[in-house]
Image 1: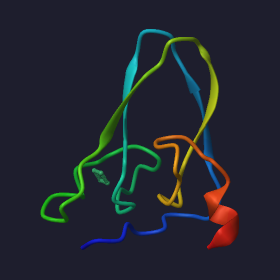
Image 2 (image 1 turned 180 degrees about the vertical axis):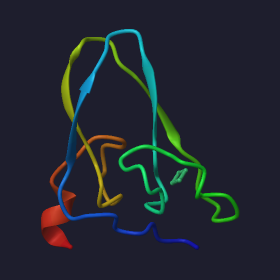
Image 3 (image 1 turned 180 degrees about the horizontal axis):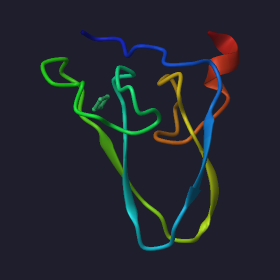
Length: 79
Ligand code: FES
C-alpha cells in the first residue's frame, strides 16, 4: 500500500485540549477518523502524533493527501 485511503473529502473539526496528544490516522483506514484505531497494521503507514499546545478547534485532514499533516491544507478539493 503506497497511497493512503481517502476517508472523506472534507476535514474533521476536533476540539483539542492543551497538553493532550492525539494520534492522527495517516493510512485512511481507521474507523475512528481522524484518529488511528490500529487498522494500519501491515499497510506500511504509521499514525502521526499531534501535541495540542492550546485548547482550540483544529481541522484534521481526512482525505490523507494534505501537505501539512495532520491538518487540512485544502488538498481534498483537488481529489
Ligand atoms: Fe490509519 Fe492507524 S489506522 S494510521
